[in-house]
Image (cartoon, rainbow, N blue to C red):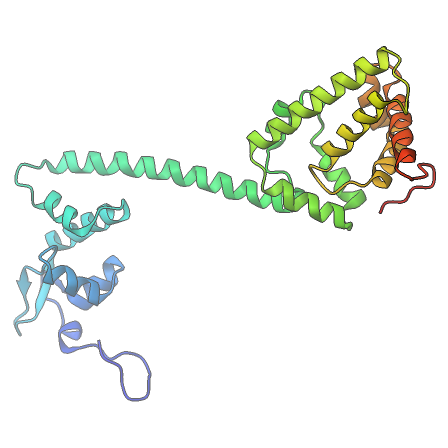
Amino acid sequence: MTSNAHGQEPIPTAEEAEPAGRDGLTVGRTATLVGVSVKTLHHWDAIGLVYPSERTRAGYRVYSGEDIARIHRVLVYKELGFPLAAIGRILDDPDADARDHLRRQRTQLVERISRLQKMVGAVDRMLAASKTGMRLTPEEQIEIFGDDWQPAWVEEAEERWGDSAQWAQYTERAAEMTPEDWERVAAATDALNADLAAAKRAGTAPGSDEANALAERHRALLSTYFDCTHAMQACLARRYVDDPQFAAYYDAIVPGLTAWLRDVVFANAEAHGIDPESARWE
């Protein structure tokens, strides 16, 4: 096609505008039918991949039904990633079985569909992550964090802290974490909880070196999600006692663990110059 002097719609060449023969289509009409450009058809003609096998009364080239069927086969193989040279060899193989080609195409298309479906699933998870910050389905969350985990906790946390800089930091970090990363975090959480429970049963005193080390491990685990200061940790420790859900979570590990953990965090905060009772989220 050519363009007119005023940059308006392209003007079809004579060959593209020429009416087709009774059993064929011109280059322009074929391009429209199969969804490729006239330039592409000219290129395929030049390299011998697909060429129009008929002519109009005026001598213009036209594509027969068989030519168009070949174009469709080319498009399928091209979509599957085959280079044009390889496609030509496949289609021109005299020993090739047409049904065998179709079965092969179908198998490859099914595999491609499967890969695309997995990609769609990944994109859906990324979209969910952009909202909640967690790149895991509710089922995966429960599988990793245990039956006691409530996926709704993430939404509740967003309602409480969604406008904070720490929540923005959490969503950014969480969106980059893989399921394997979450499994490592879950394992670290289980190990810490087990050590907290053992220390509580052993009567470890808040403020002792052992208790302070556990408080720092707790703060480091929180810092997986956002930069947690000693003041922020003290604020969370207060909430652990005041919030029935948090209290039930820790006390289910060992009775009285919630209050003991608060005292451990408070004592460690005081050792770092923080008044835990008046600490603010900063």
